[in-house]
Length: 150
Image 1 (cartoon, rainbow, N blue to C red):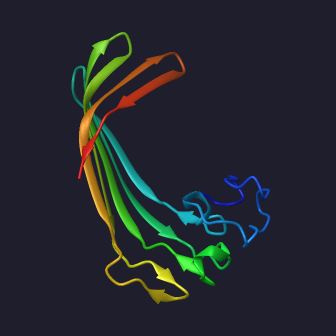
Image 2 (cartoon, rainbow, N blue to C red):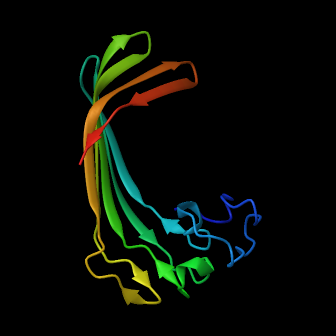
């Protein structure tokens, strides 16, 4: 979810302006009047020469959207809280090129809400693993990842 003050997914509303409630609902507009708090812990280790491993653990909290698009029929919405994890292991092939496996997993830990009412059994979870690479030259980085998930 993106804060309205930092991004403007709607061509009909400038950042920070109210969303025209009579517009058709699209997924990128659900969070226009909400913000997210996303603290995380990250660690990177180099256990051996040319080998790197990194992981991040995130907590995700979403505020209440008191002005959702009218097409939702709701006066307020709030996405559930979630925890997600990203991890990678990589081997350096030299000249700034690293390759290795990547993985992520996200689990929604609370139900979402519409008009303050819990959406029972709404939490979702998904995870995936796949190959990845990063190539860097100076301050430029190119990342490529592929995932197979459930």
